[in-house]
Image (tube, rainbow, N blue to C red):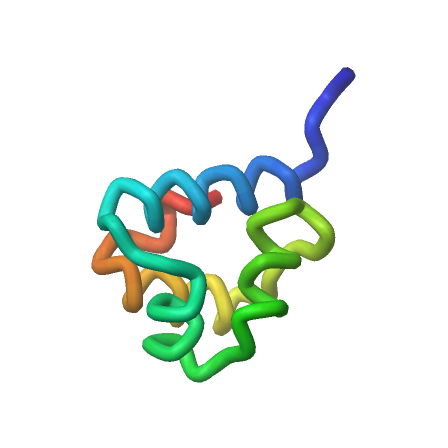
Length: 68
């Protein structure tokens, strides 16, 4: 079964977060977003808007292109 774009992005966000040793709460706080929204993105429940993806990338100190 093919993964959706949202699922692929979510998996990449989660992997980057875990590589940095950060919790969802820490990343969400750095992004100015709710932890539940970050969790929803990581689970592939929604595809983040470009601005949100950039904020997540900045919070994780990775290029946004790594997350898509």
